[in-house]
Length: 241
Image (tube, rainbow, N blue to C red; front, side, top):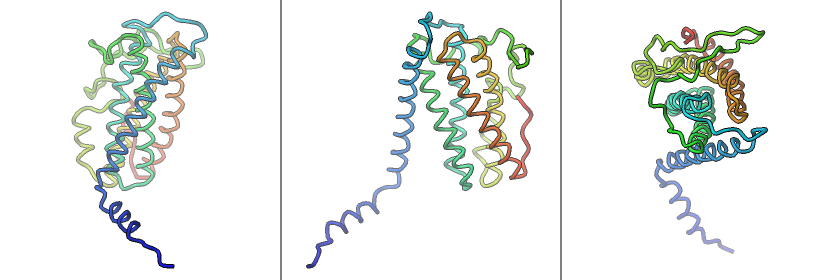
């Protein structure tokens, strides 16, 4: 018996002619969904992970400062990772960039959820990192002063790239792009790790401690991977922030 394939042919033709930007729209929608999920999870964790009810963190607290400043720090990582993901031809770098973009987008959503719940602005109106006023636990009973000096490269916070470095990243292609991305992102993670460690050591809110510890674990693993990828491509890490 003959089978009418006209409908099937029409469906295939429509699929083939579907504009390329549809994939971009889908990816964009997915990232927005991740951000919203992070915000919801942030509010849920704030209410449920604490062993006992705690006072709402106020302006100048470790919790608010961490959420505000780390969101800014993360946002640059997401920007750089998104650029790398869209422009690299190296599958390993594309996957790494996607993982960083996804993880840090979710974490931004979680921190913004906290700030909304605490009735605090998403960004500080003053200097960055003023919430880091006490000593930092370096392990084995040793401590170090919290970071207060601005980065030597003029970026807003330690580890972050300045405008000239971001412009250079966008100008590169091929292996040079991958090496530059790995150098900038490795330094970025190093700077963020000190902020996360301080929050874990000094926050009284369990939800903040849990997120900070998660950042240290995931970014620690990513730093090992980036160091290996950088060496395999003949690159050297930038000076520590």
